[in-house]
Image (cartoon, rainbow, N blue to C red):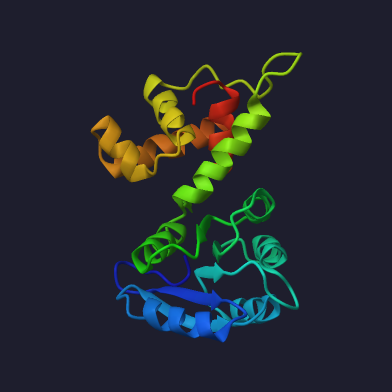
Length: 226
């Protein structure tokens, strides 16, 4: 990421929310973290794109309902024009359309505004490191939706089969992702380190061409692993 160098530079973050009463306190609180620098606060998607263009920016903390250009369209534009910038959605909305729209547009994380400061900073750090973070409510919605779509119909279960070269551990990790566990939860369940979990996930995603954690949940369910 552009704002990070060997252990010293801070993650450069843009906070986007159309309500100043939310945007300004959030920017102030995030700015207290030793490894985060809020470089801009934006009231709409146009201001986000301008801030990123002025750069450098590592992560955008993105509201969904904004004037001029909403969060989903802004995320799509960022993914196309600035793929190096990670988007973490922070919104009051946890409906299927909002979640799938944001993740489909390229968001790397999705939190509801029930999330605490530690949850938000953790998600920003994870996104800056190339990882995805979904809060529990969002994971549960995705699981419910994926289970409904993966349910066998008259023609049997749908879904792309998993490759034969997955190791037993990689299948186990995919199963636990499908059950909604975080990297930390998987590490605790399997009695391994989070670094080892990340290695398994990277290998798993490469072999299966899974794009992100939401896609992994869908593939696990379609394969009958969760």
